[in-house]
Image (tube, rainbow, N blue to C red; front, side, top):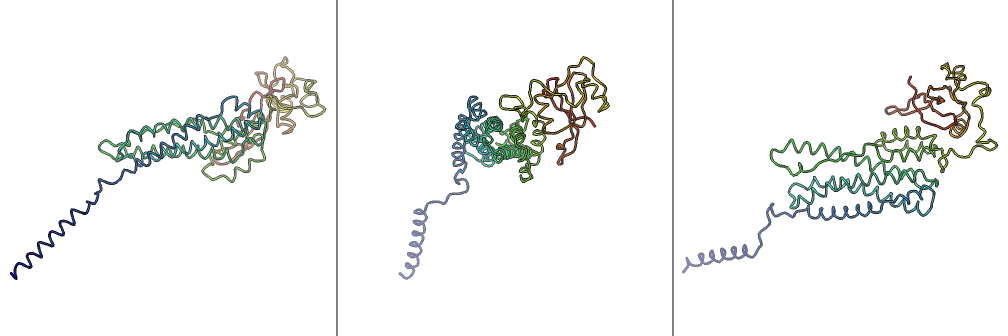
Length: 358
């Protein structure tokens, strides 16, 4: 009887342990971990719907035209649409950066790959629409249609997208080389960015009409140094055309000057041709005697009133007259002094500008 007590106690303890193990659920192992890509997919779906709405709401051509004409209501609406398009660029960049991080091990890789490809197309579309919108606002008759800070936001979103795509290309290349078997990342592909940097021409157009704001770009972060140089170069080229009045002309002539009468370029020019003046003052061979007399009107009159006398005046064989000025233009990370020829026809219309060869 004494020996039966320990045996019964042992059997009772074993039964308790077994019952406890049956009542307690098994702990999930590593394979049963939740698929977090599903939650991210829901967020990606939301961002895609938001971007689609922004693209659908891009300004129409007539709205951009009204904004250029200075219509206050059109400007307000177009400005809001511009900001949404810039935000869409950031959101699609987020999608393209997020998909590679969760693609491996996802239960729905096809949806992720499709979202990745759609984001690339939507981003370029948003960049193009935002760039066109910014360009229209920058050329508006209203000087408050858009701000330099808003243009900077577009430039920043564009740069972030370009850097993200470059980083993505490098990461995908390493993944392809480092995996012996099929890798889901190999299903992803990069997309080319726009050949011309978005928002550069729009910002140049803005600054050409507001030269005093050029200094504000000096406080921009160094990451935008390349964009800043491109903007200043483009603004220099746009300086004369941007001074044009909204109707496409070069504005009203100064008081007391009859635009139709014109004036000689320098005293005594009416006694000779532009080619003769060029030969005397700049050492350039004179143009044929039958070249049309050059009058100070339109673009030329405005340039001379703004910049003063040129370094030299030279007649070109094609009948255009070159007015040379010395300017600072971007060269690398600095600005270099170069000679620029502005070419005008006989009516004083600016045809083009070109950097003179040293």
